[in-house]
Length: 357
Image (cartoon, rainbow, N blue to C red; front, side):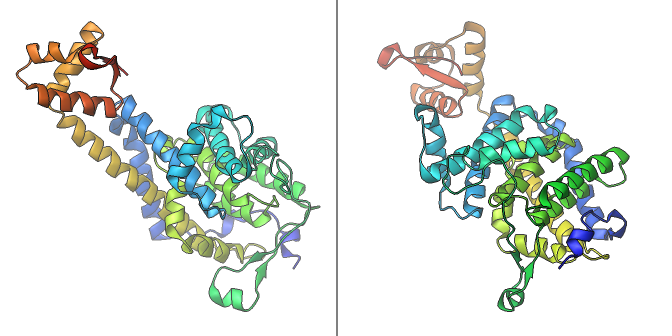
């Protein structure tokens, strides 16, 4: 099939904007606008949300790429990465993805989407060039067709063409130019622009391995750059993993139409927007719970934190003398504040004291 070769660019005039798309975009943008007001749960709780989302994203993305790592296993690997000079084997996968994701979360404001940027991220995702047989930070040396999405397509041996290895650099350059042009003219809503970019990237399939992981990283980067600041606090990868076969099926249904003159963007864009809605819904639930905890924070905990703020440190004996709480009640509050990383315990026994985390 040569249609893809003749018609590599996205046809933005053929998008059918459905009522559901409008509703989904409206819901997501409403949450985007409300996010500043929802952030009053405190920086420490926000940091905890970001850390939890990052860990879930790394674990889910590794599993979607064929790995078998549980969240806890990934967490332990990342906790000790500073103690290892050369992680081995499958350990490069979560560490590479975590490094690439961390690079985006810390430097997204200066990170425009360019070919050079994409290749650098891919180098990290593929284990910094340390995995045998993996082409890291370079476009594919050979093209592999994609299997069709549904069971009938797989049984019939239906495959979808991808860009040839020789044409991949040209196609990627055209895709980046299209993204920049559409971003400037502002005709496409940024959520639709992001979804279309991702679908076309995966249709080109620029890398021998790691295309899915790259698409998810670039989705986060684009959403951050387009003003969706909350995406760092809720794992999109976790959402996509939960959708199972629905994820690749929606993508392939759109990709099967891209090489012709009548691309059908509806299957993929509806799925993509539903995934983004679920991402913000999960975050809204977590924020609501954090706000409830903050509102219902017991008076003894408030007194402990106030004492630390004024004096720099506090002891159990001081709080027993200053408050009406019993030693056992106060001990529970101290332990809870330490677990929430709002206090740090120093010393032991009768010499124990607490300071702000």
